Length: 70
Image 1 (cartoon, rainbow, N blue to C red):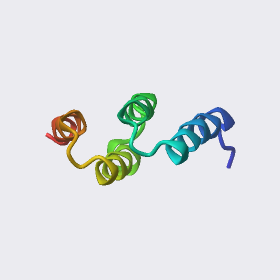
Image 2 (cartoon, rainbow, N blue to C red; image 1 turned 45 degrees about the vertical axis):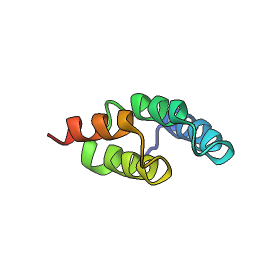
Image 3 (cartoon, rainbow, N blue to C red; image 1 turned 120 degrees about the vertical axis):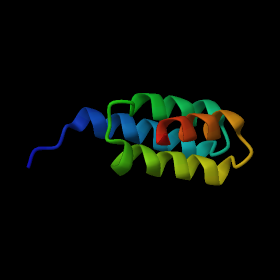
């Protein structure tokens, strides 16, 4: 099975930024935007839940997450 290395490289960049600044809403939103074409259940739900654990009071994250869940 061949893996698309550009996807892994993009993930690595975002994950590296999140290690440095896990409470940066902009990084989380950019990461989610970069994964907009990804499967919601397999990929995006996990990202949203990780982001919401770090920023549980973020209206923007909750709104986007709940909007997609509907």
